[in-house]
Amino acid sequence: MEQIKYFDSHAHLDDARFVNEFDGGTDGAVKASLEGGVCGIVNIGTNPENSRISLALAEKYPFIHAAVGIHPSDAQYLGDKLDSALAEIEAMLSHPKCVALGEIGLDYHYDNTDREVQLYAFEEQMKIAERKSVHVVIHDREAHGEVMDIIKRYPTVCGVLHSFSGSAEMARQITDLGWYISFSGPVTYKNAAKVKEAAKIVPQDRLLVETDSPYLPPTPHRGKMNYPGYIAYTVRALAELRGISESECAEITRGNAVRFFGIS
Image 1 (cartoon, rainbow, N blue to C red):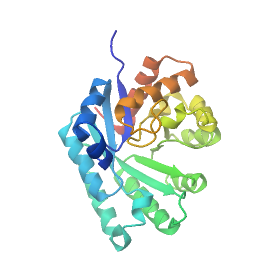
Image 2 (cartoon, rainbow, N blue to C red):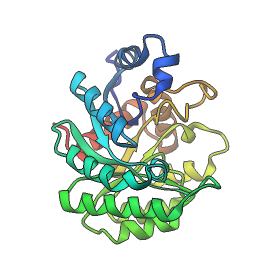
Image 3 (spheres, rainbow, N blue to C red):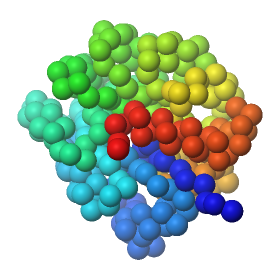
Image 4 (cartoon, helix red, strand yellow):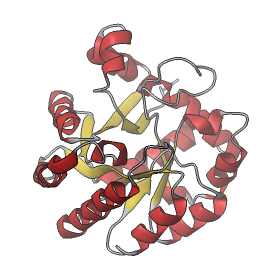
């Protein structure tokens, strides 16, 4: 039987946990992912430093591509270096293995959130995406309303809401704008009813999957470190929710990822 091929649209293989906890480090995780049927990974940056590492990984491995950006949580710790960091991210977008601007957005989960700085960094990066005509990868945590408001202010920018946690109605709104939605480990969780309902109604041509590794491991690996090789569990759960086969779901999401990121 031919092995199913998966595309992980969002991973953080540069995370220190791979170096410290995965057998063989990042290289070991890449090898194990390939053996598990993963044929494509987009490694996502959250600040200039790890965005540079993401580009280096993409240079090293043909099937890995990079996104570069400033995560909302990183933005609020850059202080007076934020504007120079934004300029550096914009320059990185010209790299031939860079396929998107991200991860950018808003994260209002923590008590020490500096919303003003996060909003500034998000808006500035949407302006960059508009100028450069690049797609964006959005992080949205407990900020659905403001994220939607900003997205609507940039109608020429297309993107993906990664690790989607919104409602089915929000999914309809975002896909009506021509955007994509990506599902991760939580779609396998028993208590994730809202996410499961959204996963059922996303149009087939706007559907992506991801691990967000090393975070959000799927069932049955909750409590462990996630890695791209676990993408099969998410694809399997998504396929079941949508009433299609795992191989069909893998093919659909792989094709969508290649199209969204402009990968030849």
